[in-house]
Figure 1 (tube, rainbow, N blue to C red):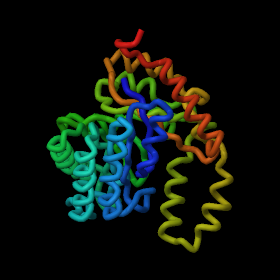
Figure 2: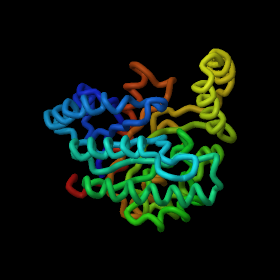
Figure 3: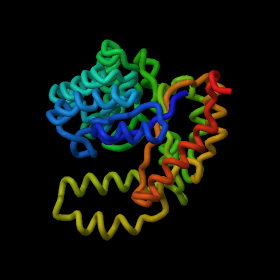
Amino acid sequence: MKLGMIIRPQPEEFDHLKKLGLDFAELDFNPTQYFGMPIEQIREVVPQLKEASQRTGIEVGAVGRWASHLLNEDGSVNEEEWNNVREIIKAGKELGAKHYLCSVAYVPQLTYYKNITAAIAALKMIVAEAEQAGMKTCLVNCIMGGNYITTPEQWKLVLDEVPGLYLKYDPSHSFVHGGDKGAYLREAFEWGDRFGYVHIKGVVQLGDSNEPFMWKLRDLCQQHPEMEEVLMHQIMPQVNHYDNPPAGIDSINWRAFFGILYKHGYDGYLSIEPHSRTWQGEKGEWGVEYTIRYIRDLMFNPSEK
C-alpha cells in the first residue's frame, strides 16, 4: 500500500508531502464552481508540478475531475466539458498519474433510466481515454456536484456495463445514506473487490446526514449570490451535527475497514483528504500528522520488518 494526500496544485505542496514522509500526491482539477481552476491555468501549472514531483521523488498517484456536468439535457455528451476531461487526462499522463478519478452529474431533465444509460456511455468514453494515458478510472462516491452513482443501487447497474471502471471509495461518504453509523462495512464487504483507490477522511455525525441539503444550499447561493449572506451565514451555521476530524479520532472503525480491504487483497493507494473548517492551521497540521501515524500502523508492507 501507498499513503498520500490531496494537495493544492502548487509546486511547494510536494515539498510538504516529502516532509510528512508521504508517498504520493493527488491533484483534483474540478470545475471552477467546485473548488477548481480554469483549464488554461491548469495547462500553465502542470510543468511546474511535474518538476516538483521529480525533484522531491513524490509521485502523482491520481488526478481527478469531480462534479463534472458531462451530459447535456438530452443525455448527449457536452463537447466543452468532454474536452476539459480530456485535458485533465492529458495532464495526468504528463504527470505520470496512475489513476483518474471522476463522476457524472445527474441530469434533472432525464428519467433515472436515461441518466444511467447516458452515464454508462460517457463513462466508457472516459475509461477508454484514461486507459490510453496509462490510468485506471475510478468513480468517486461523493455527492458533490450532482454525482448520484454513489451507492450499491447504482453500482450494480453501472460497473458491470463499463469494463475497466473501478470505485474511488471514501467510507465517510456512506454516512450520507447510512445514518450516523454509515454503511461502509457492508459496502466494503460487498464491493471491496471493485475498489481501485481509497480516500482516508474521518467523520462524526449525529443522526441522519444533512449533506444533500447543504450542497443544494450551496448551489442555490451560486445561482443567487444576493442570497448568500442569509443562506450561508445564517442558515448553514445552524446545521452543526457533522464534522470531518482526522481519521483515527472519528466514528469510522478503520481497523475493521482495513481488515475488509485485506480480505479483498487491496494493495493500492490510500489518499488522506483533510476536509474540515474545524481542523485548520496548527491544529490541522497536527491532525494530518496524527492520521499518518494512525494509518501507517494499519498498513501491511511485506518489505518492512
